[in-house]
Amino acid sequence: QVQLVESGGGLVQAGGSLRLSCAASGRTFSGYRMAWFRQTPGKEREFVATINSSGGSTYVADFVKGRFTISRDNAKNTVYLQMNSLKPEDTAVYYCAADRAPMTYRDYREYDYWGQGTQVTVSS
Image (tube, rainbow, N blue to C red; front, side, top):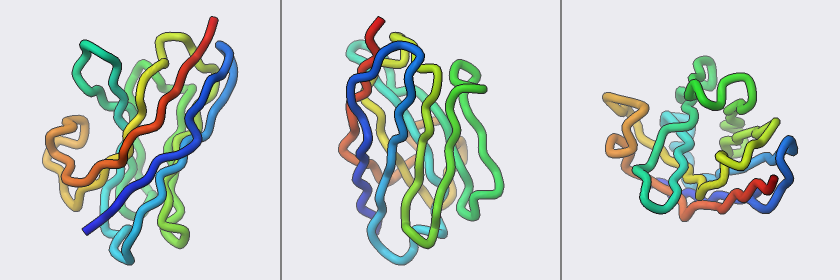
């Protein structure tokens, strides 16, 4: 049983940065793979980044590689998404997700737990 709460979204100009946080409840956080997804109206929820339970392995989508970094602090029950060089096309609701052992980590349908989402808006 995991509850997730995202924060850190907001309005930023193109080229700027935001740091999203996802705070998880429960003492089992360290056993979960975590991921960030994003969604805009009319589009399927898309994979952004993932990190394994220990934090030793990360993967980000090609369209954010070199700009976004995922990390976690298991002692704080928190996962982060550092977003740099933001572009208007990054505008979306960003969701934090968790699952013990997703078969396909890029597929949102594999994740059992979700936060409420946080809006990121990037202006030109």
